[in-house]
Image (cartoon, rainbow, N blue to C red; front, side, top):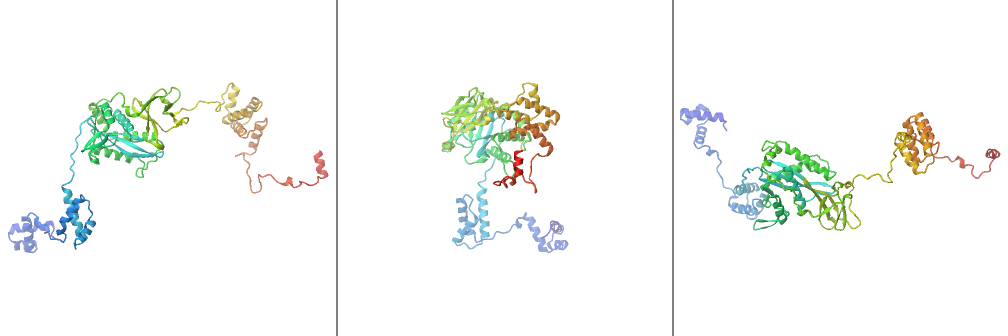
Length: 511
């Protein structure tokens, strides 16, 4: 095989001499080689293509084309080879694979879907879709992802489920975050949007029609089983799941509560909306400021038909009554109106409570079904309880009491325990403790008071005894057994049990 330089020398020699033999002598090659490259140049390189040779599989190609057509281009080459062998084919499997690949390529050539770039207009399209969220408290969550087509602004909201009230609430919140409503909304053919298809025409859900009329928006659905028709939201869902759902690839820890997931979604939106988008090379939040001028105003009151029935929260008890059961709501909603509905059936039935505020509808509580006399209460819905008769804390009423309580927690504990035990002359003993605090370290006196309270030692000399013992045995102040000393009481006193007393013993006893 000649190099490019050698071929050029051969052709130059032929152009100079006009003779094959003379050109071969000048280029140092055979005149046949010169003839080959001269003819190849004259034919425009066609002679380089190998001539097609007949193969054993040629007579079976119509059958291979039939199988590829029936399988819509998915038949495997090994399956086709086995079928050909049954028909008397004697060629190799390698030849079959090449033939099947060639037929598949021809089949797909006329069926390639050509995508035309979508040139969007400001304020026209909003796409939304769902993604599987993380598991929190043993229950799966849903990520609602909305994508404004022109500015590429994203809104990601966590949902408990994909029921119609949850979806309507998420759309309302998305509209309010965007600062307006687009002309069209594009989504999947979920049951919340499309009831059925008749002759390829989608039949809309009547509640969705009322929702769209309330916000003056037109809802369209993509072609069934065709994610490519709403690729913007599909890509946004993929990116959101990669950053928000704990996986080995992102090293995220599991979420401890639904509130943590909400905070993570807000942080994610802040990150993706403030950095430059690769398609527009501009931050979506900057483009949204321009697109807001083309969006329609958001309805002043949210669409609440699908949220259930209303209940008024009492002004002093954050509990509502729904179908003979009582359910707690956050105490900040005292006196407010909430919407209550049920979700699910049987043992998994839940009562969902939604509050509609300035920022739109927000789910504030979700309880299992309650029974009469057994209310469903969430501790986080109530503020810290005020002090009752069982939680009294010492409060000084005079300088002497204040000085005693200032010794520390041990003094406070001693006062509570001594009072509960009915200890007499408590004020005298408190005065003695203050006198000891002036003579010794007040920290040590507070420590002794605490130990006296724990062990119930409230006698006159108990405090000084504890201080004296602690001073003689610094450190932990604990008795510990060693190799030559035990804390167990000895048995030597039992050795004389049942024996006659001696005169010396009697004398000692009388004395």
